[in-house]
Amino acid sequence: MATMSLLRQRMIEDKTVRNPSPSTQQSYIYAIAKFSRHFGCAPERLSFEQVRAYQLHLISQKRSWSHINQVACALRFFYGVTLGQAEAFERIIGGQKPDKLPLVLSAEEIKCFLGAVTGLRNRVVLTTTYAAGLRVGEVVRLKVSSIDSKRMLLHVENGKGGRDRYAMLSLRLLEILRAYWTRTRSGLWLFPGQDPGEHVSIPAIQTACRAARRRARIAKPITVHTLRHSFATHLLEGGIDIRIIQVLLGHAYPESTARYAQVATNLLARTTSPFDRLSITVIPPD
Image (cartoon, rainbow, N blue to C red):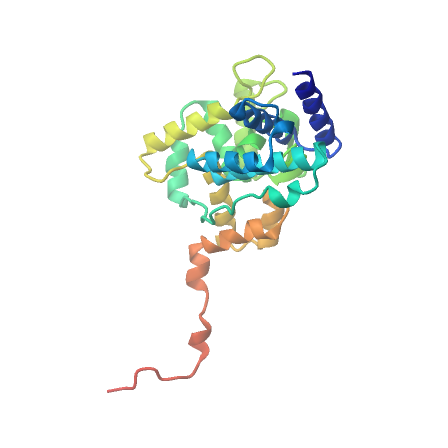
């Protein structure tokens, strides 16, 4: 038990010097703890074969590929860095995530969905998510001081990967946020939760999202992240350069943004096929 505590502390220190986000730090520790409990044995006594068996177990449990890959990353880090077994980086592999196109709502569906959200706070949270293209973890942690009305920006602190960034703040959204603040006079957090001094929780917003989808009678499996997908796609369809959208979304890699071109249907419809430029008769006249 003492050895496990020492290893846990060592892993935390190894991860800390790499400056991860708090959520990544927590997920790695949690993944190793679950791996250890699954076999009822300290993780440093488990072999790569048992790592492989655990990965197969996760697949049999129909866990998502993102979860399976996150566990693989945690195991790779624990064995490769904390235990110093360099072969871990080759022997512990992740799976290939299925390349699914993002679900996107039409402008009318967005209007219908937001209109079905009950509660002033929840409606403003989800409206802000779409209007600024934020992740759910980013929008719930917005502070009143995050609103920069002079530069028309939202300051997103500690976003994905622990990075700070700026998101767009439209004039209409600014008016909504000002009216919301006038009514609520929220303190530190723009969207406070039930506990004093805490921001609204992610599960609370996810619950509000599911309830609004049912009330709006939209058959699509909408999540909070669907609003972010829709924001990016609607910008692209509106003619905004994909490199600007990449910055607005806070994507580290252009490949993450490029997939929205596959669901921007009006761009596909407006694109001229190279075949149309050929002077060729395929079906001869009668």
